[in-house]
Image 1 (cartoon, rainbow, N blue to C red):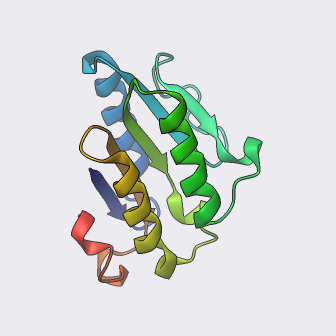
Image 2: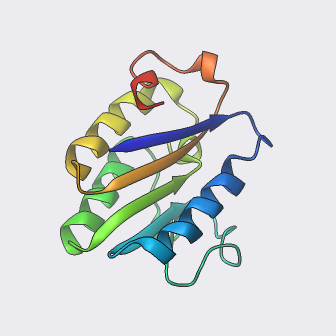
Image 3: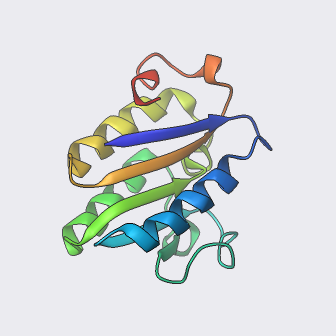
Length: 134
């Protein structure tokens, strides 16, 4: 299950995600994983959440992001929630590739893992295949 938090830069997407992460850590019976580009959230999220910097693993592009998320899920069956902050940064701002990547991640996450993604774009500019995740 994928949920998008969409808005232009400075609209409060990351703040909303931080609140969701901290609430999830308190309520989930599994593991919470946060994937971001750069370590901006280090001091904002609860230490019980696993924070991963994609730059540390040289991840760029949709295929690499999908493979990384698939590897996370394959190695840890206890993950119940994944948060991806700033997915367009990882995709080199290729908004047209976003729908394919979200579909791939949704397929491996299934109904057992909740995936929340921030997208820095105006909702009206999203491709048609992405709007189903709003």
